[in-house]
Length: 219
Image (tube, rainbow, N blue to C red; front, side, top):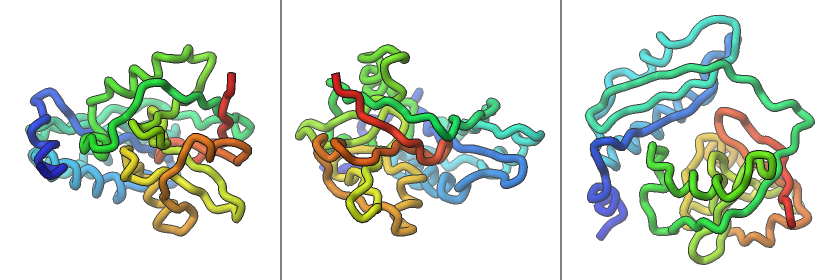
């Protein structure tokens, strides 16, 4: 059975696609075109009805002088919902503490390539640690390969200063920021083991927050 067929047999009426992005008063939406392309690809792959003009719905939802976190959701029948909340970037000196979950991802789970409201596996991983003990929780697959964080992609700096990020074959969401960094030659995808996190500069990131310095917490 193809991965697309696998996805279609597992869809449900209460599943929604989601895109989370950032809007700034002086610059508008960050990476809007990339978010819209990912939304369109996921809608097609999962058999969702195409939403009517999501870009216009987003434009109508924003305004003011405060940066905003934007959450766009699309139901299986193509219904749109946009919610906005004020966004405050992390202080530049902030370093996120990373821990590795026992919860595993499955490398052949086609749903991982789409950002949806199916979040149980990520929530289970996050629940392994108290908020005070971890800013982000990393997940491995059944082979022990690095995949992603519960809300970010992971990036490891190599000896040449280039960023390495786990390959899609390991099982993960192809984040919009991740795709941009790869396309611009700043990052390269490859299969990574947890050992790659040791004694390297680490970052986690997504389109909302950008790249955030991080460190692995070893107990």
